[in-house]
Amino acid sequence: MKYADLHIHSSFSDGKLTPEQILEIACKKEIKYISITDHDSIDSQYITREANDKVTIIPGIELSSEIDDFEIHILGYFINIDDDKLNETVSSLKKERIKRVELIIEKLKEQGVYLNIEDIMKNNLCIGRAHIANEIVRCGYEENFKSAFLKYLIKGKPAYVKGNKLTYKKALKIINDANGIAVLAHPGKIYRSMSIEKIVKELKCYGLKGIEVYHPSHTKEQVNLFYNLSKKYKLLITGGSDFHDESNKEMSIGSDGINEVLLNKLLNSKCIK
Image 1: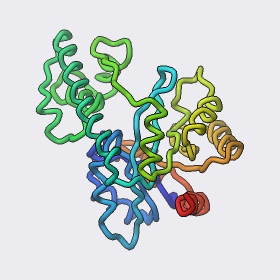
Image 2: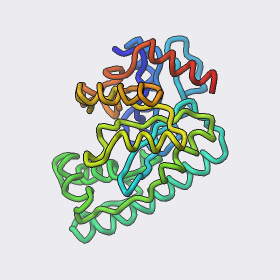
Image 3: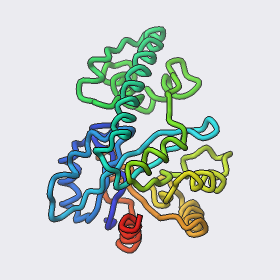
């Protein structure tokens, strides 16, 4: 187990477990620090107010944004969850997500797939394509999540609808203005034709403070590359499991993350911010 797992998703975005269940697992595994970083949502952050003598919970979020028409995700740590602009932004993003789901449902009807948005929203406060894919499976139109997602919901498929994402400049500003630390999430997932170093240099100009070097999708070569980029540009190093549910053991809580030394550097940077 890692000392700190700083990339976890709860049932308030596209994860399966509640914040309380996540905290319970972290306690059992003796992970010292965690951060629940739901997509475009801070609904789960109430858990950071609960006292716990075993695990420290760092307030977090994962904002979807774009650079040159390509999607990138930016993690925000130590955010002030009471910040007015942050709350306005996530509220607006939630409404945009609902509009997008409604449009996708209309497109699915043309394919003979009939879904009810109320059923999708029943147990999900912040809905997206993952919830639609799960509903497609639940209703018996496809056998599994992957087939549902790939058949209907990715770019170029019949029910795809482009989401309205923040610009990278706005995402970075929102995090920094909320007294947070902005970190580029899983750079290994960014479209391969793009130069990661070019992106890092550009984002640093607008307030990027770190790179998520350790992520289950990263190869050893990528870890070395992102580690060296972090050092070259004097950026913090973070990492996490990107946990969503317990079905994938390679992405279980604490399976990836950072050690105590790197965590302390992150904590110290917050003290001098």
